[in-house]
Length: 187
Image (cartoon, helix red, strand yellow):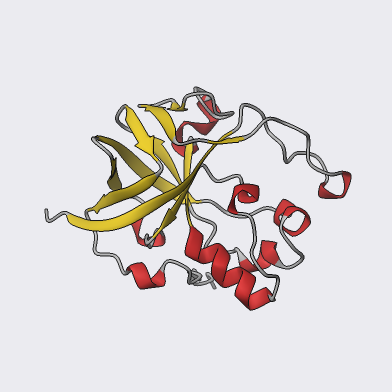
């Protein structure tokens, strides 16, 4: 099998030990500590050390979420909102230069610095109604089909902010990173 390598940039590494978006959006988010780190430790089968999903059985297949910065930039342009804070999406790893949707069902590797982390990309990270409350009205709908992907770590390692390489078993088009993926409806 041919591996395809793509230069990407890790812009943000979000870690939060607690959930902030629960209950009704109109009631507001919980005030929980959240950090945007320079490095995060990833443990196979468990997630990101210190994150709310770390070691939670119900979230093993979705312990790490990847998100394309281009998606949020395109949404901001479409909605005319100006810049939107990618940290408010609560996605763990915000990348630039990565088309993510074709990776569903695949095992990928993110190399950053001298480390690498293998991830199984399991499913889309569908947005929730909180996106309208926390980012801007209309973001929830605009984020559908480009909310990122949820992954299970299959190797231990460290992810670092900065230049990285995405190793994929499938060919990607980085120019499509901000475009929505629409799944056909079943009859």
